[in-house]
Length: 137
Length: 163
Image (tube, rainbow over all chains, first blue to last red; front, side):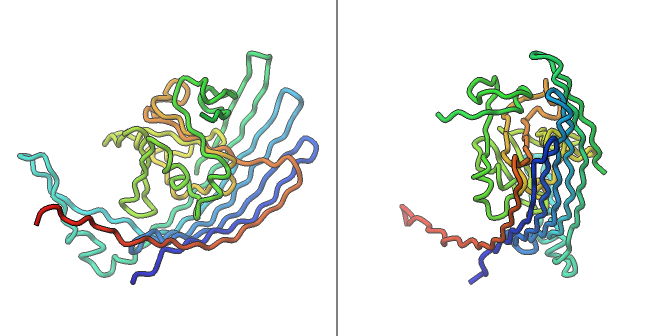
């Protein structure tokens, strides 16, 4: 009998509201075996969000995140297009992870980062200014 | 029908039943129930949202009401995703590494189904996924450690009607 899929999810975080500053910082580590061969994923993730109230009508919001994932590489199956029947015939026997022994345990690594700064000014009861600047390296 | 407050439909707080597009909200409680709360896992139960894991965890794809990939153009599946209002779509392909977006720090997720291009641009023809990060209103620290496993029952095949 196959081993059942296991999930591991753990995080630690802290946050506070002190005067005009409001913040939240959270670190996550998770593992997911992905249900099938070599589809496992490991994730490390840090998120920081902070808001500073300039006054009653204006605030600055900072939202940042950084994550690293390491997971099984997903190989696509090759296929031939049959124009007469408008169908595709898949050839799994030619897929890298099936045809080539060395490719079975290949991994794909991702790094995502984002820094965003949001300025909001409630100009009046019916009009507000909302500007967003962000950086996605 | 339970009513909820949504923000993403018009960028200000509205009752979910008053907005002109179909909106769904995935609550913080629902997020906590997930074994591994990545963005794709959290929204895959929303009606009209289809999550595909055909290529494994690293390449999950999201379609809303059948929005599909338009080959040759950098719009992915025409679904725009935002975290705290900032885009998380890859600029060169328009796609989101949905399984890389962790939801442990999220308060809620709003899903707008159907075209939201007027507010969010042409890449939001299929819909919009808005994630709202948590901000505590008092001193708070928390940690959680969890391990779960999934067991599936064997498929019960029906008896053939004709031999």
